[in-house]
Every structure is written in C-alpha cells, then in structure tokens.
Image (spheres, rainbow, N blue to C red):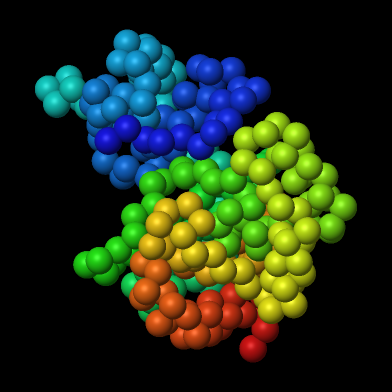
Length: 255
C-alpha cells in the first residue's frame, strides 16, 4: 500500500536527501528485509530511483543485499546511527520505551510518541494496538499540529504569542483555515487539566488522548498519546487517563 505522506513533507528538502531518510524510517519500522518493489510501493517512490538509492546505500555500507531473495536490509552501521541520542534520552531505567510498552499492555490500544515539526506533528514511534478491532497508524505519519490531541498538547506547552504566530502562518497559506480564538481557549483548558483529547480529527470514528512528556532541558518537547476506536476510547477514558498519569509520573520522578 502506498504510504500517504503529510502535506509539505518535502518542502525545503532536497528530494534525494528526503527520500534517503524515508528509506531509513521505512526499515526502522519494518524490522525485516525488503525488495526494491516493496520499498517503492510503501513509500510511493518511482521504482528506478528507489533502485538507485538502495544501491547507493549498499555501496556506502548502510544496507546489505541478498541476491537470491533480492532483498535489502540495514547493516550494523545503520543501527548505530544516533545510538548516543538513544542512550542519553531513552535508555534510562523506566524510560520512554518502557512506559510505551506498559501502556500498550495495559490499554491494548495504539501508543504514539509525537514531536512537533513546524506546522505539523510527527509520530516518531508507534506501538500498534494488540486488540482484534483496532486503529492502525502508519509509521512516520505526519498531521497538521492543530488537529490531533498529540499536536494540541505540544502547542499547549508554548506561549500564546508563539501559537498565534504559527496559526497565522498556517492561515496565510490558505491550506486548512484554523479558528484561532477557539483553539487558544482549548489550549488553556489543556494546560489546566494536563491532557488533550481529539475525536475524528484526522480519521473518522477514532479518538486520541495525549499528555506532555517530562523532558530534560535542551530537548524538544514530546507528547505521548493513546489512540483507538472512538466508542471504546470513550468508554475507557477515565482508566486510560489514569494509567497515562501513573506511567508519566515514573518518568518525572514523582510518586
């Protein structure tokens, strides 16, 4: 299935550089080898340019190739990219991956780690729901920041002037008009209650609950979200929010 990229994904980005990073993201989430055809189909790239990029990464030592299966997969050189960031930020006892794993086991729903990217929110790590009826989020998904709960909780961490400037820029480009005053009021409520919610904001019949993660000084703000079918999320709202608070407390060091 062709991967649907968010609007503006390649704005201001050299196309080949952006495609290389998307290939890295593809393998990071796939956890398995893939053929040229599979990579091209998943990312929506032309087959010929995909082949050239994969061969280039093979020559640079970031991929290896199995001729019989005609499959590429990352090498250890790919694996160590950014490991110092992981060790510094994620790998401590009780860290973010541990919290995400626990929430997935406790709620059964899809768990999302999100980060702001300009006017968008990027879902940078996803644990898919383990329930039979579930809401599937594609790895690497990007959404307009003002729509899902994960984006709203990130906006709520910012001052009003910064939010207004961002929203005016969005409205000036005429993509999706944003009602500024109602959103500012919603952000004030999010700050007061400590979480954000959204229903059918991007995908019909789904809901998302999100909270800000405690991060060390110098790190970009992150949001943790739980998402699933609307009716089930509504029924489980109180218990999910309670579990999220409990798990986030272990990150912040609170009892």
